[in-house]
Image (tube, rainbow, N blue to C red; front, side, top):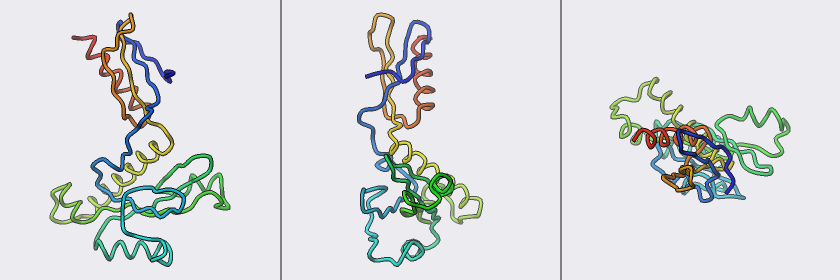
Amino acid sequence: MDAIETITVGDLTARIELDPEPCDPREWDNLGTMVCLYRRYALGDSHDYRAEDHGGWNDLEQHILRDHPGAVIVPVYLYDHSGLTISTTSSQFRAFDSAGWDWGQVGFIFASVEDIRSEYGAKRISRKLRERVEDVLRAEVEEYDRFLRGEAYVFVIETADGEVVDSCGGFLGLDHAITQARAVAEDLVSV
């Protein structure tokens, strides 16, 4: 595989490459539940909500809030044109497709009160905690977006004679992969 980035640390070289088999971050331990209703692809998390049971996005949002009273909920938008990209705001899609031909709301991501209490040990969900949870939900969507866009990487660290001394994959975002590869190479050099 071709290196996207190469880092040299001492006598070691770290190659950053595309991850040929990235893991879906929605299979990890997430605070939020991503409910996407899209006829072309199965996106987000497994759920029992169906488009035909709801009279639009407001109806679906109210249904989720009835099922999970007090949940923190954020809309999710999808752009589908020569690839997929997902976001919690529509402004980036609206900027280059104002007619909305290739984008629209695809669902919601939410965190139930029970999950928030479990994660943060909070008896009461303050406004500040709700804002923090919204930030976490947005970050989960950003991470999923990197996965959908194919921004998953591995690193391979080799000696000068080509011996592989370490490798690791599953990094979503090139900067994250570079940072981790550099840190591992520096640790190996210092040993």
